[in-house]
Length: 314
Image (cartoon, rainbow, N blue to C red; front, top):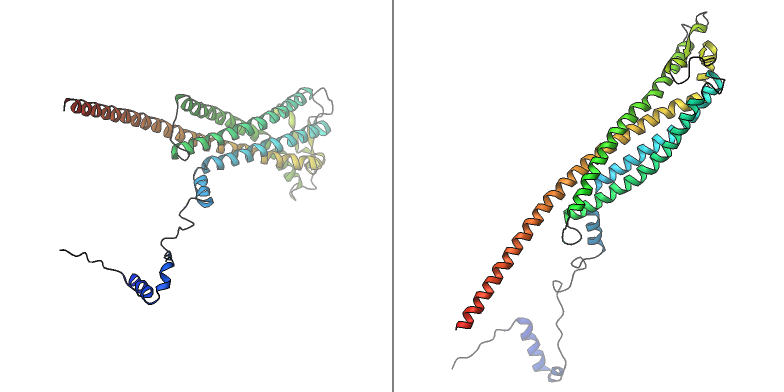
């Protein structure tokens, strides 16, 4: 006869000796103390920290930076440009064209440009939010953060449309950037002429009154506008006014804002192009996986039918 030998651990031997010495303790149940490895760690179960890491992984940081840059550039261009245009009209009316009929067309054009600025600000606020939302969608879809990845031809078409629209807007803003440099050039010429008048070499000489600025040569007011040309000390007084100082610097800031918007749109264009390429590759991989899964399912069906036929014969 073969005996089964049970090898007890030291802890079990001590418990058995305790029960032999104290028979009344057998009625008590022994509950082993869980070890540290048996206890569930608070980090083992998914909690708030893991959810935050997952959410941060789905943030399109490139789109977020481009959106902030786009909002900043458009805000600088629209806000500073609107105030600078109003200051330019005030300078023209007070010094270069005292007759309202001479600059009536210019006033209407500037008023129209101010309304266009309102439209630009509203449109780009909405367009920036849409592009940021598209970045969130594409990033989450490519990284498969919210379940199985699925894309449609309509989604890829929308991404391609955003690429084309952003390219068109980028080209248009290049023109806006060049156009916003024109008033900066005009005010710089006036300011540099005033600096020549203030210089010690020309100050106190008879040639100061012959240093003039004719605003009519820029084509913003007609040639019959009066006076149209300011010389000498009168021109220096214009450069010392608050309207000239504010308008000059605001036009510089507006031009810088237009340049920042161009950079933001170029950044958006690169992001949208890469996202569209990712979606295209992911859709091809998805189609391949669907075909592979379908073939495997058909193979399993054939094997199951063949087994059923073999079982029926036996």
